[in-house]
Image 1 (cartoon, rainbow, N blue to C red):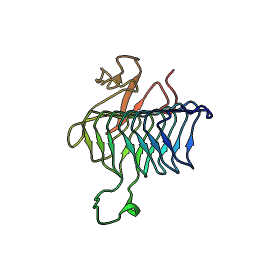
Image 2 (image 1 turned 135 degrees about the vertical axis):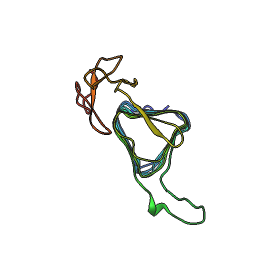
Image 3 (image 1 turned 45 degrees about the horizontal axis):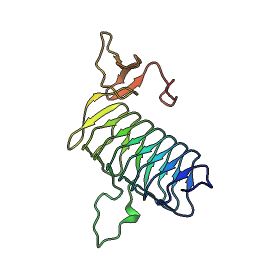
Image 4 (image 1 turned 90 degrees about the horizontal axis):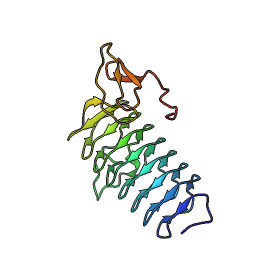
Length: 203
């Protein structure tokens, strides 16, 4: 076990030179952190995960087993990446044609959940606190607070910061059944929390 850093890395993990890993982060069995990548504070990197090169991971991110975060992917704070979910970074790959100069950037905004075995086609933005269901294939941008399921992925509802599906109330707002926080679709496809700043931590 690595003990001479302010993060933990299992003895089987591979950590290249030229990486930044924040305080309190944990990296588990047979994971590979490649040169140029950045991992924030208090992250949890599961088994058999590959990060980078040059990928950017925010603070408090949880990446479960068997996930590869490729060059061009940026993950903001407090994102959940479920087991075996898939990022891509080239839209039309061919083995015999080098296309790493055609990497399309993918951005996952704060608090989003990308559940087990979902696939995120490159070049997209996944909005704040969006929830991509297990096995979904996402081929277009996902709005903040959207619940996306299916192949191809489609928005079927809105979810709260606590991850619950919400229903409209009498005045057109929506409420989270766990927290009671209220949300409103301020314009078509744009939802905002009425009680919290989207960038503020949960109380």
